Length: 383
Image (cartoon, rainbow, N blue to C red; front, side, top):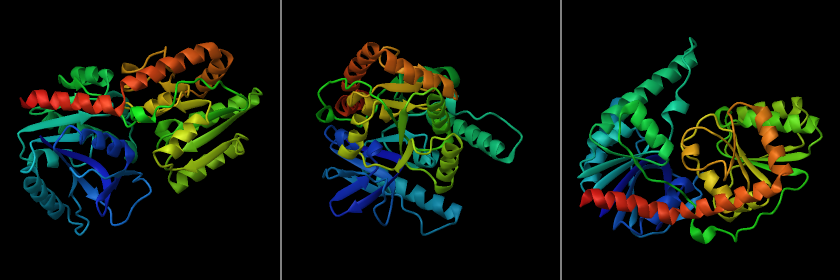
């Protein structure tokens, strides 16, 4: 069976190798053990980018390029995409769109395959913007409505999947769609270290690993570090992830104003693999205070490396992990973050129980198990 996958990922061809971001690459590589061929209907870059941190050398994974940077005309660009989709899709049995992704409807309508799937990995409820009478807020609200319209059109004739039981319920409630739960992950069973709770020392070493923007809760986390410092609790915060230069300057100013500039270190992007896993192992607590999420792969990464987790109860997170595995906080609440850090530190026996439970949960949702589950769903539908 041949599977065509579309996502807004950007890939780079290097001889017989494909470089792509790990959130797609590790998952696709594992899928290649089940499908006779996988086509990546993605954009390509002319040179290797830092975000392309995962190398694929599998002979049955091929890039089907959507590279269209030679034209800036929207009509002509869409025409070229339509032509590419029609030509490429004839080689495959199934299409899977991993969304939400910008050109999803255009790709969906122009790929002629027997079976189509949409893998939903975000949250409609948490990502819905508040309507305000400002230019940027109106634009954000309009884009959200447009995405909902696109999804409604796609879901009418598509097999819908979602990577959290919580977002499965969400799709049923909001869009009256019967979706199937199909988890996603990037961590292989081979990458799990032996289970060992390292304890939480002093200073408490905090880790943030995500795209560094306001909606990931990074400002609330910095505020929490400031609160702890005022209370005499010593902490350090390592911030991993891509950040725009202007926003990084804003965060540095925030750190300076809160007198925590020497306690917060901006590392930037770290390649998936040993370097990234080492950051988890060297940290006492992983904190992700997002405003909204689907289900972030970093929770599995922290779990596999026995790092205690503090996370917001948003999107699809609470559908897959519970209070016995992670410490939940509410979004946009620095005080709850600081209290959570103190709670994990003061009751380390309870924290160890959470670490052990989360480690076992992460094993059950390894990339091997997730890829097998997707293949079983696709294979069943195709029979």
